[in-house]
Amino acid sequence: MKIDLEVSEPINFSSGDHQHLVQKAAIKSGHSKGDQPFTYSSRNTPQEAIKYPRSKQRDAANTYAVQISDDVISEETITGPPGPFQDMSVRKGFILKVFVVLSVQLLVTATIIGVFVFSKPLRKWVISVPWFIYALLPACFVVIIVLACCRDVRRQVPMNYILLALFTLLEGLLLGSMSVFYKAEEILWAAGATTIVTLALTLFALQTKWDFTLLNGVLFVCLCVLFVYGIIALVIRSYWLHLVYAALGTLLFSMYLVMDVQMMVGGRYHYEVDPEEYIFAALNIYVDIISLFIFILDLIAR
Image (cartoon, rainbow, N blue to C red; front, side):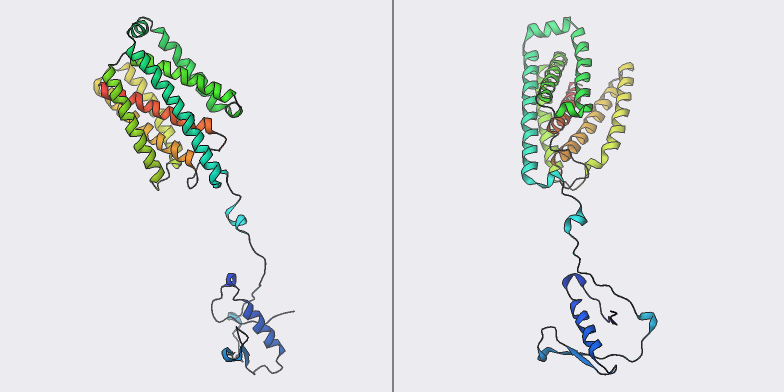
């Protein structure tokens, strides 16, 4: 059956306003005389009847065919399937796990550094045995590469906790060995400054509307440039070159910390960490904080 329908004003189809058009067309088709006006009441009351006269001449250019469908598009079809972070309980549990693991890592690292700094026999032993530091460097790189690249390993309990504990222990020993070449006051000032900067950047990451997760590729390129710059700084012994290197490293890992915190929180950001990757999230933030501590310590020492 064809319905001859004229629309003279905008109609909101989502609110059901199109129903009176259908009824109007049905009333029209029931009249035998084409020029006879008809009435329609939106509330089925004769007092509120509205007259719609039918024009005798029609412009073919302004005649349109309207198809009305009762199909309802679900909200899930528009927005897509819900993500794992849309459940508030899952997100809170994930963030709690990350902060607990991260707190244990930082506590163990600070304890190891304190033992190296305040134990004179241990300081003398590390200074007399330089190969100890050089042996810790490749061990740390191997463990962090396994945790970062092997997805199944870092999700498998208790293997992920064992590897993370091993990396934390090796990183603590490495930082403790490096700390013997600095004064205790410098280390305490660096630790305090790192704590303040970490808290301030975490609050900034949670409050800002800027999405730092979009800068992932840019920050990686800057990290590669900083790595090359560090090699040049090792060859060229210059005070200002090392000072600029420490300042750039502090700035870069500050941005990395903001990005990793936003990826951990998830929700409104472009990239987010899967709730099962709490070990990976804690590892990222831990490396950011440790790197900040190293560069800030270098700045304070200079």
